[in-house]
Length: 493
Image 1 (tube, rainbow, N blue to C red):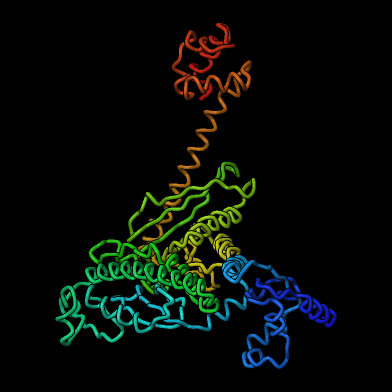
Image 2: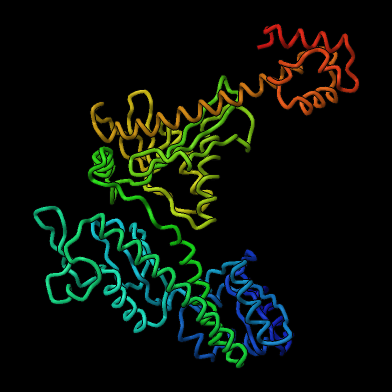
């Protein structure tokens, strides 16, 4: 370690005095910080001079310097190029200390608690995994507060200072003071109509965030052109953070269960027995299907507000291995599904149901662990006793067969099972049809392809006459007669 430090100090003395980007690495070679400099030698040296006040005054910087065992540099033509390269390398390496320093700024976020009966729009500085949606961060606190005030007038939404009252007829009175007269929409409204206001307000906020994003990037460019690179970097970091947040919150809208819907009671029961924050408006279920270890496939079905959303169904062929292993199959398809959703910034369902017991559920959890993302609420439904299996070590739960929550789960699971079996049967049928010509002696691969290309399918080839088959080059009368008899005999079905 001491030798590494000596080599590091020797290297620093050889650094050029031009502009560029420097990468600090730990003893394992991991990049822990990326910075830019007008003068590489002066900037990097400042970290390792004991008299430097900014290092001693900030514990995080001091801790980082202690970890540095290697430094590499990229020289640039000018400071503007260094600014752009720094941002690119931060995105590539995601260094620990760049993230820590950015998080310390703690700019304002807008929190929308969609899991509550009447969602409100609040300001906060920390994002939590509480089922809410967050917009931001925003640096201009005064402007943000003014915007929320205008949104309350425009959309008739609730902010943090409201105290809504539930009326005897099931509706809500949002405000009990004079402010009620100046807000859009009726002050007394239903939960469903209020949620429509919330969705409109969220769409507006997302659009406002996009306009702020354009402003931040414009300010970054202006400061860079004015050679004010530290300020330009601040606006660049803000723009990057806001861009990520917009991506994560896009497509937030869900179909909220309506109380008059017969499935609502089943969803409400699931919220109760599974200890969820809200009824699971969106449920996705996975099932594996195979026949004696062959034709292994999987299905994913999606239910919204207790009803099947067939357009969102997915079916999977197992790609990562050959053979019959339900656990590995489940890990693969769950990973493929939510890895894709995470990468696209799309929202996860309220509940994931795995058709199977502890082994299958554990495999699904493993998929999320491999992806390094937090899973949504998840359970398994084991067939033997229709018991509910939890991924967190809780005892299995067995509900009364008449329980509305269990019936909801069974409906989702049975649909996943049906869809998987249908896909399995389709593949087997296709394979059987494809193998018919393989079993006919005297027909090579070239002529087999020619026949299928000419007639389009096995079914059309079955209906062809011997003379029609002879129209293809390389197929004589005798071969055509034998093939026509073979296909029409029915023995190959």
